[in-house]
Length: 572
Image 1 (cartoon, helix red, strand yellow):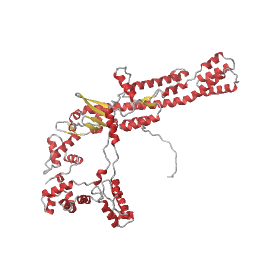
Image 2 (cartoon, rainbow, N blue to C red):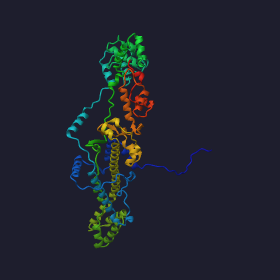
Image 3 (spheres, rainbow, N blue to C red):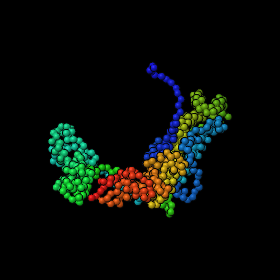
Image 4 (cartoon, rainbow, N blue to C red):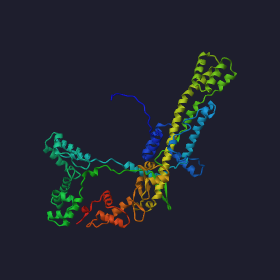
């Protein structure tokens, strides 16, 4: 078979998401802070969009409370594919509408004005945010101003190194050692490698390491857990204690909690060994942990669930989102497209030849939307006119209007596209908020016992069940709840927390995995430390309560809860 480049054609079918649908999905999936950044970026790029000032938004909210007439809202069930369709974006030709050519722009302008008014009225009725009090804003700002950057482990050690009496060579080696410590303060590099890096003898590297190990926090610079614990006990003056002997000689038995064997080798009672082990447990196995950055994540709830008498009220968080509307500025830009032909038509009716014929030709070209021909006729007329010609002013003014009209056509096309994009963005954001609200209300309706009594009463719910009630696809529910949080009377939770599988009970019902895990934790918490429960015993206890659970499931939940096996939990 010959090899070479070939040119061929073939037909394929594929599904491709339109850019508008991709944007709609991105807005649905984005958490509120990301969505806020996306909206702010769109505000910078789209001049048609503008943000409603806070004072004006509050004034609109008060006007709604006084009972002013409402306007028709758009249908939230409108498919996302239709959100980008805009009559103003693609006006029909005059031949299809039966309108006169000169009426085309006026009809288009009227549609744009109607569109603007429609969305102004729509967002006047939107669910405006409940503004926080000045005291709450002051406390929030004080909290933000109080956030500081903590000192790292390396920075602390380098500061201690500079105040030490190390020689220049050992200080250089110590700096290399500090740079090779991991986040927990352990040295993972050998002395030989450190010495080679510093071009110094191994003995000098060992001496520099010994000095670094005297720095705070105690145990820093250790090469393993055993050395870390020994350094801490040496710093505390506990070199002659039982716990020091256990760590120094019997670290393997300590790790396996072989208390009777340790007591036998140390010639001590079991109680004395357990007391020494409890003191060892109070040491810090990771000295650098206190310098680690705070991994607490501050989240902004997107949904609020509040108790109102015997019911729960669900609302979305709109305070973090800018409120958008279509700007009035585009109206001035669009109005520049009209050409006043009154002077020219008057000249065509009452003027003298040849001005009369030329005026009729120009007017016919303008009405026939032959702008380039009209401009050419006017330029020729202007060039052939005498300076004292009384029609010269009319020709100049008409030519200026025609040139402005040509530039306004490009402006009108640009503004029309931006209006369509702005309308789609506004609709998509509103549809996102309404979809999220409907999903949250369905979750609250299914988890009322959780809202009243707590985690133990969480019920198994799947996304497919919620999607069927809300009337959307299961993947839409998954996108809508991704990375979003809800503030409830029981605390703040990820929305995905409420979607969990369940275990069958003897009564024919289901119980959520999270609730079963809580029961497992409670059983282990109440066990006798001298007779710790095995996984199969816990499984039998839950089966006695009517919950069908296997031993391996109990072992899985125990591991997720961070509870050791029974052999390592036993206290002698």
